Length: 376
Image (tube, rainbow, N blue to C red; front, side, top):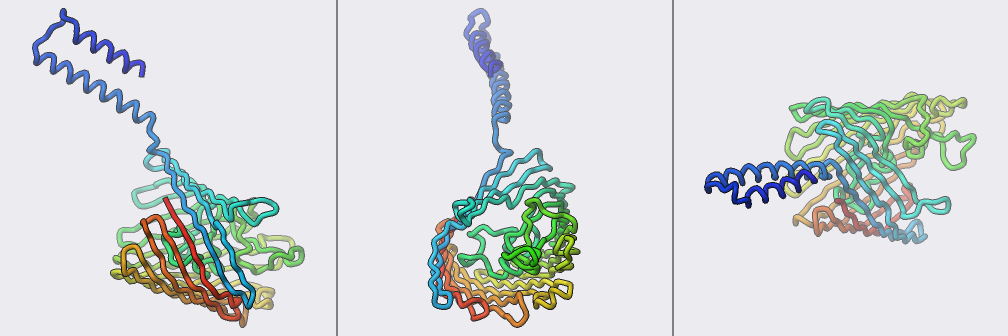
């Protein structure tokens, strides 16, 4: 800045001095040279103060649930999530990405809220179509796990199959490699911490085969037996997405002294197809848990599926219907039906209404939900 001010002063003195009178052509040339110099100085100062390498974003959602659980009212209003995204580009090929989340407003010993870091990783472009990530990363399974902003899906609550069988939101610490091929096929390979379910001999809050309860969330995570996750996806046809994914981990108890659980394998896949204003979605996921104890508990196979149809008669209004079926224990077959409407006054703001109905095995939780969400 000091250099720039000095240049301005000297330029003014020089041009106004009658001893240095010039022709009009010479004056114009001198002014053009000075203008070019000053422009260069201003561009340099602007680049030094630019925040173009810093990226901020976020999303949030407010839920109102009015349900009847076997004759007992469940009426609740909850700011379910408040999320901030922060990213920084070190250069054109290296960047940092993070997601900071507060759930249920207050997180303390006497409250049910939580403060979580769901993403915090470095990404390196190895080539124009391949990337390496390392840090805390969302796993590439299901539809909602990686993209779960409220404006991107129907219904106030996330699809039940993707919060039970696929324990969304699900992340792990480790590393991944991704590549996108020219024919619309891409694939991802992840190595991360595995699940660790609770030892039933010392825990009264969980069981040895509760998949969702086994998420370690990269918080002092036991890493004796790492998990390997892979996905292959096809998006080469307009409106169509096909994906298949799998995870294998050698031991659900992370090599604890008491062997109450053995290996676990997840397989799943989904398809979405949109033509004009209609969209059809289908997803299936299944866990196979090895060991006599899992079989004796009736939890050696846990699976679920859903089908969703949606239609947007207007660009800012959409309606949907979803049927979900799942089982986490032998002879217990849960069903849930959801249908409702989304309204987007802006593409990054949504208001939602849906009706929910469950069968006996799922808990007979019937009623309606209202929601508001945003992203930026």
